[in-house]
Length: 512
Image (cartoon, rainbow, N blue to C red):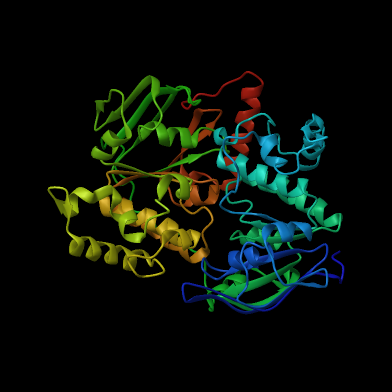
């Protein structure tokens, strides 16, 4: 049980950016040995509060106390000296370094100023604690996002922090990986460590946290013991009203005899795909179901021309393609919303307007000269359609919440009116309201005749938003099912069973 000692006390904290107040009169107590959740919609201020406690933002007003001591001047280094470490949603790793080098960066073992081999032993002990299965010599740039998130978590634990702030720690993890993380959090709590847990996954909060602070529009609505909360009570406080979490109705599925927009036939790639065959028809939402590393993102990249196909064929409108490039894929009406919106989807140094216009500049210009009035009108229409906040066309995307950044990225391709839209983790790290709007957009665009390929680590999202699903493991598709015939539990059980068969040297073909 958490103790009555206060690890972090926040009183009267306020913060503004560019004249916009993002936090107002924040007061919250976080106890020693407590897993304390911060919840709210995107833009509610929960990540900003986490960054103030972690020393990344300096409050304009108010005070932060750590272990009973008021902190006048705070930086990440100062926070770490007081035993506070932060794991960011947007990961803060050095991609050219290895896992081991990132974990111990700034804390390397040395003798007389010369690096020693002690870090390998430290990493082995840390891996026993975390049970993440990471290769210490792997280069971070070669890791998937889920694996990079594990590196961030290991780095915080390696610094022996007494307060660990986790901002969306499970957003890129499968349910099995999330369970292992939560088991680790329980061990940290048992050691008397405090975890501040920022998340949109209400089930994870209800199951694994001791207390919750709910925020809305930059203020604290209330704090309470988790034992008295339900998903609906949290949602009601977050939104200011009772609300149901509903899946939008799917458009009718296309006739199976309808020719596919895109078809893969026995495709293999150097990135790990092996004999993959699938088809996506106009107006059809097709899901890829599998664990992280199953090959879902690799299929998306192969279709979009980002990864070369070494054997097999990709057909567009029944015509076999040669070596397909990204630019050719876009010209043929294909679009990809990647899982890493900040590094692969958006231009973070630009504003909303160029980010939305980027894929369709040729439609709002003549002879290479843009028509600003047309561009602004179109961007304003997209801002209203998706509910992007801030509402002005030249807002700085880098300062937007994750949900609003994702809406800008979706708006870019909505303007393009693609024939096939590939969505890789479209609702990663976004709040309930933004998630609902993204789900509505998926069904809206399918109704216009656009085919959709949907990838998500949330099995319920894939199953409830698709007509058909392909089950994947180890770079292969091993089954195809109507989504209506699946549940998250049965799909996950089949994926695990296939993994066991594969490790035992057996294989299942999609037609079995």
